[in-house]
Length: 372
Image (cartoon, rainbow, N blue to C red):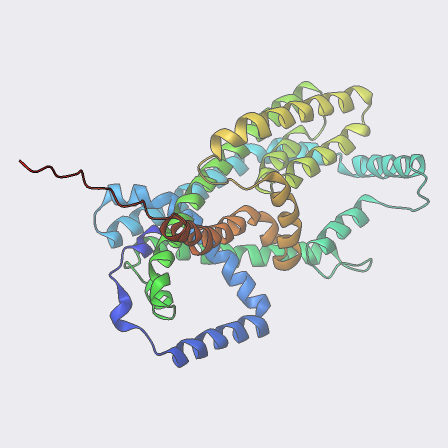
């Protein structure tokens, strides 16, 4: 979105006040009545903006023409990304397929462990792994229930994912080749003159922070997945490879994701024995030390400066409002909101304090003049 900020001053094209109010009122009404569609579009735009922000510096190095550089870098990135996913799937298919051949026995063992844990906690409720998964899907915003077919829900989710990926590919490429001021120009014209500069600064801030968030999350996911895989393998955990991949992917959900991933790994380890459980707990403890105190401060210091307690509660909030995409993009949503608050409220307040909060210095007294 950084290129959105490079525009001329649109003050000469300002709309009348009544037109501005009508536009904003119509936008609010449309968002309210078509919230489900709007939320999906907003999430996809946010994801596309993060990818475009990541690739924009490379695009500028490839060509000074945004059209040429954007097309080459944007489409090239997705081709490389798809090739890496295909290669990873080819390398991991056999070991994962071999591990999942013993899945029926593992599922029965997990159901037995769940019954034992619930009895130990004094809870007289029968819970199976399937019901637990259905509950997670329902909590994320689906129409969950006892009669819900998880395979049908999975197929529907895959369909939505394919459409979202197509929109993400073309959306991120379009943001790379867009002309300057395509989005900020119309927004600035329906805002008062004093806010035009804040709009440009906000989009530039979002672009910068989304870029570093995406860089940081990729580094964090790779590090945690590698560490978890090595630790699970040393502990002798069955299904160590898919569980390690899940632990790495879960890093995209701040705070809650890693905890859920290692809780599932602990559930699998409980079907094998105490040694495997201790091994998973040791890996979890190491990750909990390295992630918040070493990894996150290094890779996220340029992107996110929001207190962890705020992140924790907003993750739950965005998941309930936007569904699974809100869970995955919780930090980008926080970045966007914080950029608007910072540029429209905090910076303006600080400027006003500097301008009016200090009393002018007393006039200097001229030195007495002496006659010759």
